[in-house]
Image 1 (tube, rainbow, N blue to C red):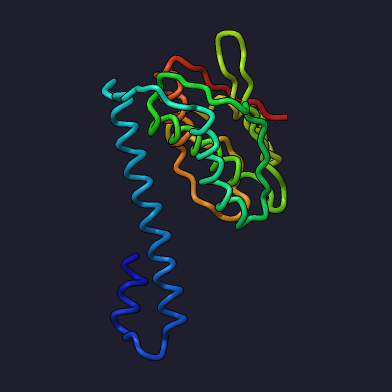
Image 2: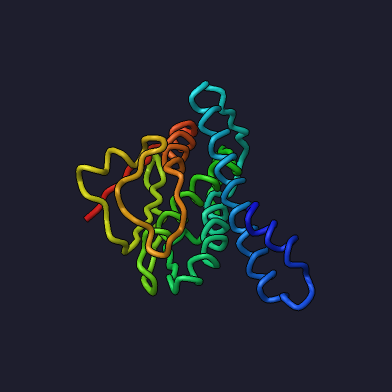
Length: 193
């Protein structure tokens, strides 16, 4: 950020609009990543100190899932990734923390995008059971070696896979996701074939 902003300040604004636009775009991308990292570190701190609070209220979780899909579909589109889903037609209301649950869904969906090959697909299935719901996200990425699956939910560890378009990863998202889901009485798991 400092290098790009310093270059803009030193070269001036006039006559270099496309180059300045490029620098500003990079500054914005880095600032967004840094804010995301800071927020994730704050979440980890709350989780580790057992102070993560959940503000539960009755929410339509089908709509919440639909919103997370819509949010991530625009990002997926930049890689040519097509989202598809199988969702219940009727609304389903549960006592959940809307913000935290959407954060968890966004973490998983953004990982599916980051690790999927361009021009592939990501599919979300929302199944209704007798006493629970199952949300399954399937991508067509490179997969995770069996010996690395245990690292997925460990903070600051990665599962050894590389993002497919140079996206950044902090190694915190799935740790946070697991704690959010378990904090709301759910369970999260991962498999790779």
